[in-house]
Length: 247
Length: 247
DNA sequence: CGCCTATTTGATCTGATTCAAACAATGTGG
DNA sequence: CCACATTGTTTGAATCAGATCAAATAGGCG
Image 1 (cartoon, rainbow over the protein chains, first blue to last red):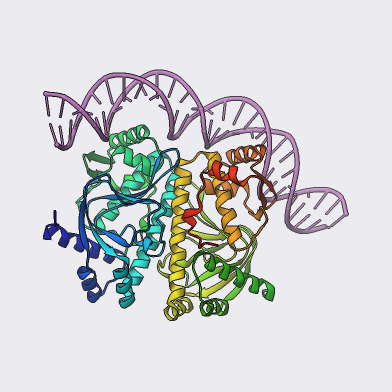
Image 2: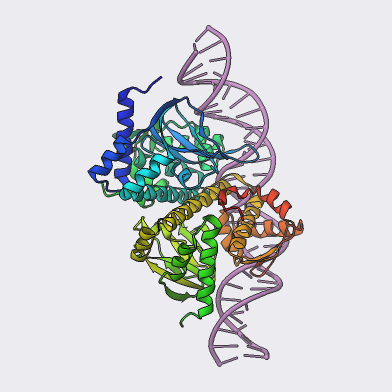
């Protein structure tokens, strides 16, 4: 059950790609990241990595797979806050917020690299540039949350779906998980519904509309964008909030 | 037009109270905060402090008044992301995200203390504890955004309003802006609508219901909580996400 | 193959929006 | 300090986007 070398290497690559997409890393900082000691583990899909209320002692890096952060509402409904590709550090905030106020789970089988808080704290103490990159990452995280508030609070259900597809297209591209106009988006319609505050039935109908209007195609876990400009317009998408470095 | 000494002193006090509510500050760190050089300014209500797209060179501390962060949706609708009392540093993220992806504005006349980025960067370099406190503050900010996503995405309109009243009660208390069960909440129903993703008309009806059921009373800018337990239940409120230090 | 999980479609219902108008409160200048 | 303008609140009626309920169909996968 130990990780094939290639998975670990590719995961570390995406970690570097992700950070480079939001910050200029020096080559020595890049080396530190590549050398970061990790406990590597595989998790099946639908499993919690950390759960609401826990006090984790490590952060997790996504080496492969697709995760989400979510919280379950008293009446049993799940709200997905954000989605995470390989390269992301989705629970960085646990470094300074001891107790989880939400859960982190796999949406597909995933390979994860666990880094103890103590190790991370030592690294950011020695490499202030990496600290700044990580702080910036958590701030972009917050910007993504703000956009989600706007998405759910103000946009029509049709636009909400289009917006998610635009955002994830940009983020997939940052870590080279796209293939031309196609990219990996292993979300069920139920997941999409939980992310956009809609019902699965209504997601299905809006998806049908997006397909009918030839903006996208979706086959299994692959989403193909057929008309980027039209999708951007439909989702009222402006990538500024993702704060990418000029690429 | 210069700030009365008392307003500045009280504002700095609330800044310290706010940070102490989320972090343990040493007395030397407290002194640094109290001595932080600021350019103090008064702003009328309804004015932008920083606007979407700008590249501010300073952060602002709220010394007195009530602010909101918001973004205007293409069709002209405003989404309010968060509300800010005296003691808050609502645009700390501009330290690491150069370009604003939303706006910050006054909801009441306000006194603000502007601190240049360079000054802040120097301070957090010399006082790593303050840096950690500020990082933690931005992380709690993100937690508040997550809760707003859950609020708008999953809760009924009645619960949404109740939830906002609970959150703001806790936050007002942290900086001593409450008076027993009453606290300052200078929001119009339009502001509340823009914050909760509802229409003003519907906010009005839900407010009437909260009053009819004797959970709250609202007179002008003061909100009085008549039945805290019932309000918490109505809003499905759990303060864990605010990550307050044990008080 | 057969089970389980997801997707699709149709019919009905409802919470919230929209439109409209009256009313109250607040602020401003003469 | 009052007249008037402006902004915010309240109420009613019509309408609609999206939810709910139900059932059929299609895909994965052991």
